[in-house]
Image (tube, rainbow, N blue to C red):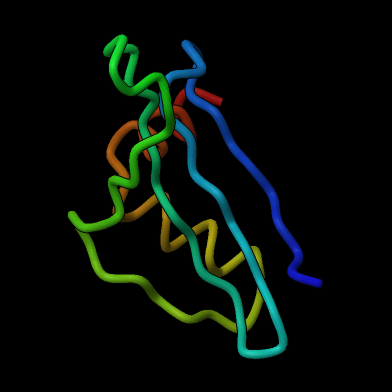
Length: 77
């Protein structure tokens, strides 16, 4: 069973999923499309490489370094 943690932006239209398994931890970035033909989460991770990290904390730091809105929210918090 994979370990997973989801972080949403303030508007809950973007999210980062930190997930892990025996191979390590990584993250995915998704954005919610409100287009009536979609109404689903769309993968945005294609904009950056996917790291494989040894802990969820390191995967979160990698996500903050690669996902601008997550980095901005980390600075505010």
